[in-house]
Length: 306
Image 1 (cartoon, helix red, strand yellow):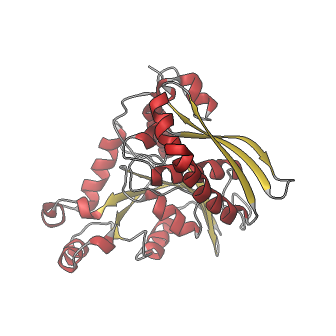
Image 2 (cartoon, one colour):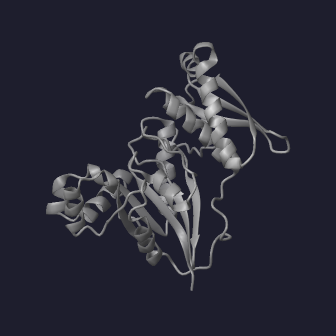
Image 3 (cartoon, helix red, strand yellow):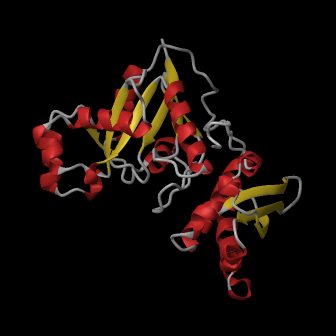
């Protein structure tokens, strides 16, 4: 009997969740940035191999929210936990205290950290598979220490692929028996426009300072696939006029650089030539405004908007 189900990937910001999803799927679905909180929405990837299908949900990093957007991000992660048949809890292995490997079970500590980070009053329903990520950054001595501990977690590197196949085997064993939920050749349920907007935002993250990227949102206003080249009109929204000036740069140099780099990424995604018409607009305090968040596709409840 085949196995299939929802696999939710959770963890703290910058644990490597998006890199792990991209490695499993074999192509870039989730944007990757050294800046935390780059994933804002649930990203869906579908991995089908032999008689196993995993519908993998990459989620925003678990954090203590300070404003409406972060509350929506946290709610998205918690909803994905509730939907899960299996949970992959991604832990930055380089950040685990040395004593965690020697005096206690690292898997137990990771499980406790998951519930604490998620603010849950009871254990999660789905089985948890712990991925001790960034193994490639560990010293040989530290790797031996973690490997020798009765962790129940698995050392992996989402960057190099080390341990990922074994991790997927662990997950597959926990999935329910089921027919495939989607055709075996599908890799995501999300529309290509979503991924185009994410690639443009990723490029802004790469080229902007540490502070400004959190105030940037991307909206696709027009997408004409019948044209050659494909015409895409996209808007980068910021919260203040001063941010708009930074994003545009002197004589428009920065926004042109972002546009050129983003266009190459989008062309690789679409496999076609693209004309990217990129604009910058101010939408005051959009991260704290429920109407603005809804405009960008975030689902906001009254409780999240407090």
